[in-house]
Amino acid sequence: MKTNSLGFKSMKDYDVEGKHVLIRVDINSPIDPQTKRIVNENRINKTVPTLEWLMRSGAKVAIIAHQGDTLDYQNLIPMKEHAQKLTEKLGLKVRYVDDVCGPMAQSAIEALDDGEAILLGNLRYLCEEISTFEAAVKLTPQEMLNTWLVRSLAPLFDLYINDAFAAAHRNAPSMVAFQELLPSAAGPLFFDEVTTLSMILNGPKTPSIFVLGGAKISDAFGMMEQVLENGTADKILTSGVTGEVFLIASGLSLGKKVEAFLDDKGLTEYITDAKKLLDAYGEKILMPTDLAFSRDGVREEMKTCDAPIDELFLDIGTETIATYVKEIEQAGTIFVNGPAGVYEDALFESGTRYIWQAMAKAPGFTVIGGGDSVSATSRFTDPKDMNYICTAGGAMVRFLSGKQLPLIAAMEKAGAREK
Ligand code: 3PG
Figure 1 (tube, rainbow, N blue to C red):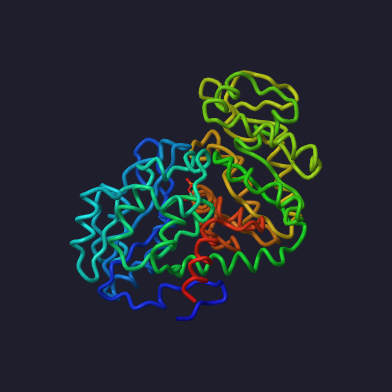
Figure 2 (tube, rainbow, N blue to C red; figure 1 turned 30 degrees about the horizontal axis):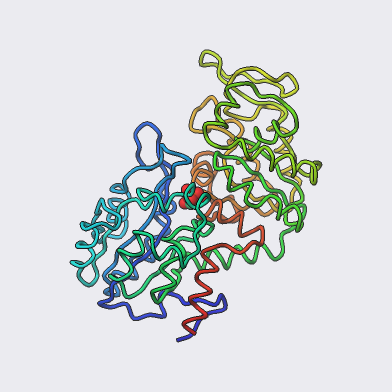
């Protein structure tokens, strides 16, 4: 059987009829903090063609996926609504089984008929699948064969498919271990994303800027040094929690509330990393010059030179917005991952709104990635005005840093073995 230019097989290279197929997708979606309901369906929509092909080809399909993480606990919810949405969009039933790999999941897998699909429980119910475990324990794919997930599920399947490029930077058992045991293939979304991002990586128009915000700051810190060192990024514009960490690293105090927040989220360690980056690339890293907070329900702004005041900052201020918009207007390529503030709250949407609207009008090539960033795109702009919208956020920026991602390494290894 052939492999393609990426060195691993496509699911369409296999005859899946009557086969038990385990498919890992990324339908991790932005969730309304109050209602706990899905607020953007982009990743679910993008997964539909893959599942439709498998079901119509007669595979017995078990879908595994994650929602949220301990880093963002409010998003860590069961996946019943994801199964309902898949069912509506496919016009084919996807039954939800609220168990990841225990007895209930196993009997549901064994009972699957040709063309049927189930979605198993949130992978991040398992400690071995959460990203804090991944960072603290650092198992190799071989060592992951002892995890509960892989021990329980691998013997029940004929084929493993991964169509979760958006989680390609996660060295978790569901992403990189099944390839050690099962014939493996990538789904079409995975191929599309890698092909398009490779084109962008190989010739970004300069100046190329990375606009990094959001709350998942490990994603930003996972790649900043590489993109600055290898010249993929001419400048990095920081906002969100990433911006706050840089401000503190530059010697500013942002007050006790911000310090307690960073401490509580285990993010204080990034201050040291930020200091090193500032020492090496200071003039290429832009930090907010003003920040917004709420006083008695009214938006107020503070110039960072007037810090500290004891508030939680939930957006960048007007002056920073103006600076960043100007940079965006002059850039050849603009990559964005992570909103500038808590844009779901009308008080703190300005940073994200104006940056996104500047991107939509920018003459440069615009690339947006990540669940919240894509939601913000639909909220503040016409998504058609962006040049490329990727399902991945953290995985996209790390791919663009030129570093090999754990998923790609695992797929290439399986591809080489099966050649
Ligand atoms: C993402 O949202 O970037 C992917 O779904 C991966 O999620 P994670 O950052 O929680 O691992």
